[in-house]
Length: 286
Image: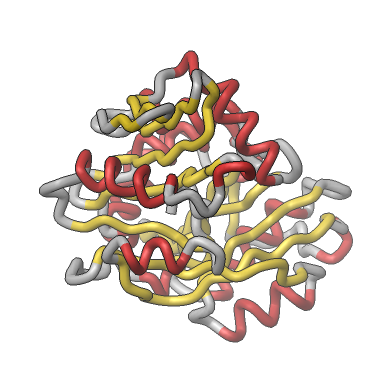
């Protein structure tokens, strides 16, 4: 890969996960080693790592969802910020993704200018909301939501390919194994009306993706899930597409923390059905 005096860019391996975690800690991010491992072990996915004098100073990861590739984990050591390292990492990753039909990412306000310079364009806004769960605020007796079973996964993943617009089945199956208590579905007869997943984090849990036909169905799953998580800290990363849904999150204690912008490479078509995605799987996994 690209090199310059004192700087080396190379492919990241599972042996580099502790270095990636050090950068996450420095940035105050929430990831666990299992999150890094998904990027480094999933088919056609990976990460670029920057070393300076044998010290890891930056990362940028990508995950392949078939027709869609997702870029994440853009981390630069605080001492290297402003050096152009982020642009170098992005250039390397986009080279790895040459020929992919669509490339996307979720940008913080700090990172958005870099991504615009790299050829990405704004699509829609999202917001991270956080709360310490008070189970009494959630209706535990929803007659529609039930815990997801492993036998439900094939039809959930089939539906997700339509709603998300690409195949993220490997990631969702991993989330089911890591946090089955966050995996719920709502059915109406033979029709699957909604499903949710989640995962643990270093600082808090994240609930998402939450996919539903309407906000009422999304609420049913969230109510059922949080009725069982009293006292735990959770985040929900919600698109700013449904005002009723955002108002309900606020009514049950979720406070807005910071914004994101969903971006796709300029000229690429928006995949899936965003209006049915009430919570994303975090900016790492879309």
